[in-house]
Length: 447
Image 1 (cartoon, helix red, strand yellow):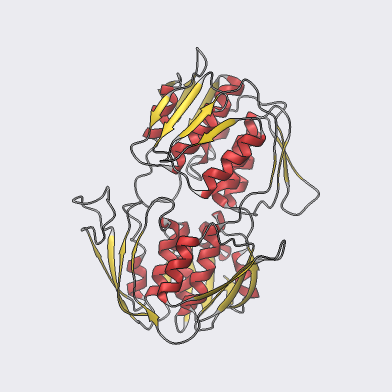
Image 2 (cartoon, helix red, strand yellow):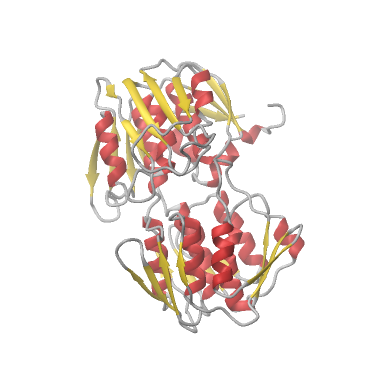
């Protein structure tokens, strides 16, 4: 733990309920994709309510390497993208970003349309299980792309242009669905995608592309039809709020017996989460006032109740909601059961919670009824949480973005002073989390 600089270590004095108000901006999982979509437009695009997070910095850097002028608009959180001079980027400069994000793979379609060529470096991201790019590569080949792999990454060309295709995903992958949308909108002919992801962020990306002139039909049963067009213009868009961050703060309020108003959070995007939040014993209140509305989350007193929970693709319980809620479930009376069906290694963070006094046992078996890709394979993807447990302070090392915020919640709920190492990773997806913690009355300091 001696390799962390002072700005990467957070000291947390736990045991204080979080109380107060904070604001969530545009969804991390939409904003970065909308930034990539700007490459498809031949006129400038404008994106509002952009959070100041590491992922936005990475995508900004990649866009600028490809000749896009990224400037700040007049409003706080407003970015403008001028794509009039898109160009090929230097391979070595692109590789500087290798390992810091998985976003570069989504540049393929837009760059093929604009330049006829794309280079994609080796990809990074959180180590939470298989996030294969095979779906992406196969889809690009179906459109007519030629993919040549090298030591540094992948060279992708489209010597005969990109043509519409009939595609069916073996799993409704969000990333692969985004890839196909960003490629199909300017491919010649019609693309039909079956077993598509339909998360709110996907629908919002479709809204962005439709504003640019794309023709996209969302049918029932996860079928999306895209009619290719020869030209797209820029967009002006305000993204949906970040439902993952909103749920993270809700879980923090529950785990610390606090009361937090999350300005900007929307009920429609969080219905599945709100159902489980209520089942556990949490309370919430919706404020629909334009501009100032949000959701208040609080612990109403008394004991929390154990639940059975399964993650799934939308409209199921989001995998990114699972980790913060498990921290709250350590405070619930009885045995809670969690079945993770999206990422096979997403329960690794529970070892740190056990170190803090939680009682969590993980299993290879599927402890739930949802069909799961990981059954009968050697992955600990189910958990039983016995509670309530009295959490105590510990030194924690953050393994990935969502687990990191869960460790932070645990430190806030625990008695004593914890040191959380690697907090810069949290900055990938949570804007000014230290400032927000201070605003909620938490006792934390960097270093």
